Amino acid sequence: MSYKQEWMDVLPQAFHQWLDGRRVDDVECIIADLAGTARGKAMPARKFARADAMYLPTSIFYQTINGEYVDLENMPDQWTESDLVLTPDFSAATAVPWSADVTLQVMHDVRNQDGSLNQMTPRNVLKRVLEEYTKQGWQPVVAPEIEFYLTAPNVDPNLPVEPPIGRTGRQGIARQAYSMSAVEEYGPVIDDIYDFAEASGFEIDTIIQEGGAGQIEINLQHGDPVHLADQVFFYKRLIREAAMRNKCFATFMAKPMEEQPGSAMHIHQSVISLANGQNIFNDENDQPSELFYGFVAGQQQLIPNVLCMLAPYVNSYRRFRRDDSAPINLEWGIDNRTTGIRIPLSNTKGRRVENRVVGMDCNPYLAIAASLACGLIGMLEKHKPRECYTSDAYSLPQDIPRDLTRALDLFSDCPQLENLLGPEFCSLYRAVKTQEVDAYLQVISPWEREHLLLNV
Image: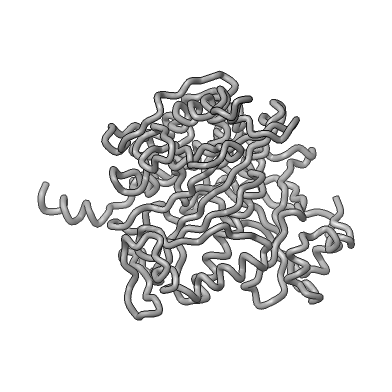
């Protein structure tokens, strides 16, 4: 494998526009780990141009969010830390506009030494699911929504997270959804996000103030799932940098503040035919097709089995509270934001299914892969959904698992999903998440000290 001297010629046009004739100083060769954070190597551009190969050890996928490593069953050579081969995907290359030097970041494909795609890599898990769609002559289309909080800097984990101070000198307040003045309160951060996104070649559909204090939502244009997952990955990085440039933090925790609503990554999903480009969720009379109902049913029936990929941390389950802007069950409804599965208002060409369960703390590659896998099984097996729900779904019982332990039990209970996502990946993911739960249970919380220390 050779990067060749002509690598500059195949970079996206947006990067060349941002470059504006300048010389590239540095290149960041990156991949997304299980948590969805950037791992990789940085080097001078001249070294990148003449590199013959790039490698990273397999152990980067064995690490938990708290820095520990898992021991995997049935993998006797785990700790030899053999190398994975990285191949640049220049279509997923963007500027690093916050860097002091002129810097390019390039997402890389991860392969085994025999040339096959590595099955532990989140981006490859998504590609694996998309291959199954291609076999059916279908192409999924997705549009994620990114919710996050701007917060005051929090350097002591023992202290609660607080909203930042805005331009008025006052702390942000909650329940200001869609307020333009609330968005303007953090204008410098928003301006930097826009500038960084433009330099990266990303088009923001809309940006709004959400219901929480300092909570922002960015809607992305619909498109190819891998491309959109790449965008979410890059957006998380650039949003954090824009916030720190303005002396605040950006957090993608599902529930960073007790009295504020959680942050979601709603995924709008549709599927088109590769043969004619038509939305397969419509029948010949422009009515919802059987495939549409199968996709909805797959979401209803199978999301509990992949919830640990959509809500991957112990904190994730604090978001699912009755009457608190997050679903508590998997009813489906037309233009009904109380249901876990919403069908937005649209013309027939734009008929789509919105998964409202996904938390913003997810790895975007894995969340999109898991959601699409549920829909695919529902279509192929001709599942039938429950009746469309037209009332307040918060009045119904909660049927979403209440904690990560239960979600992991369900993750081990669906062979169809394991085959789609890959047995090697599922084994790794289960081990990592189980160890994270065990680590969490070693910590004594302030609630326990407050209510149990002298009362039990």
